[in-house]
Image (spheres, rainbow, N blue to C red):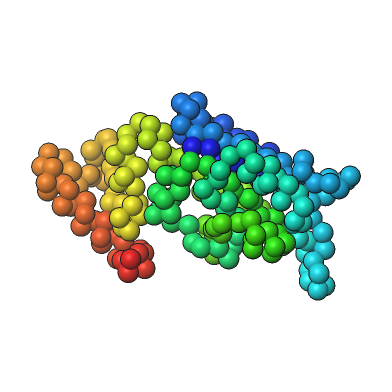
Length: 225
């Protein structure tokens, strides 16, 4: 898999792609991640990539030319399954979407900035618009990192225990059951007896029940799915 991230602030992504599961997946050759500085593609001598919006609105808008130049260059080199734009008004990112994207071969993620991008980019180049939540960030780098991390950890071999990814929260539209580790008794706070019983069938039943009850209490909206 290959992920190309287009950013005005590529330095924000340096530590992310060089640490933890994402870094290990890169070292194993499971994923290639390249971060492109949008300013390298502008024709402006001052390396500007934004300008004032028509209509007198407040803020600045990312220009068409550098974005088009970067995406066009990448698309000349290979086919991309998705060209994603991170934006608050995109479709809500969730686990099923992460599962879907993990099956793709090549993805571009354009990080939004300022008041967004010239809408013509969204009309003519972007294939998918994604939001990671109903709030506004300074830039789309954090959103791109969240999407990338969520997708990469699903790649076979990215994490040591493949079953762990399949049992994560949201995989079946339910929150995960509570988890515990040693010691069995800490300050009188005890691990539920069922988890110490060794009865796999009963433990699985308990886990399913806990997942359902926690989802009903904390995220009832998920049950509608």
